[in-house]
Image (tube, rainbow, N blue to C red; front, top):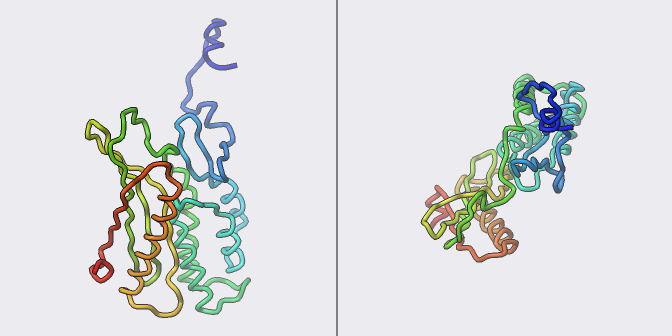
Length: 225
């Protein structure tokens, strides 16, 4: 029985900041949590936090944690890549599967774990066009790529202009990769990120039901030329 029904029956009720929706288990859409009221896609870390509460601190345990994060469109990319870089460090140092982590890497793992609870704050609209009810005059896909010695990646946004010249942007997806163990120069990594950007843009544009011009952005002059 909802609040309106109680009021109709003359029953006094007190409002609460916690709604019925907050108490329901999240609706799953393609493995991600979906808020049907606000039409937002987000990550529900409840199961992940429950698994992490076991308190493991080994290479085997961390690898299990990575395997429990399902993030097909990359909304958690900047967060997950930290853990993948940590795993690469563990492999490089030759740490055994069940051995204790070196102090420096243990600190990184504990810091990462403490941030996991805030993952529910990362939410994106399911519908790219948001609340716009006007005719769209222009669609564009903007892809940004970047690289460092540790990782490289790309992120794509949809930019659209209405007939009234209102401009809106929507997150589409991202891809982030750990830099290979084989030492590569930073310009080579920037070029690898640009290639990843081009491939992602091609994949995204083939899925959209409308034509969109693609723009690529990089802060690497070598990649640009």
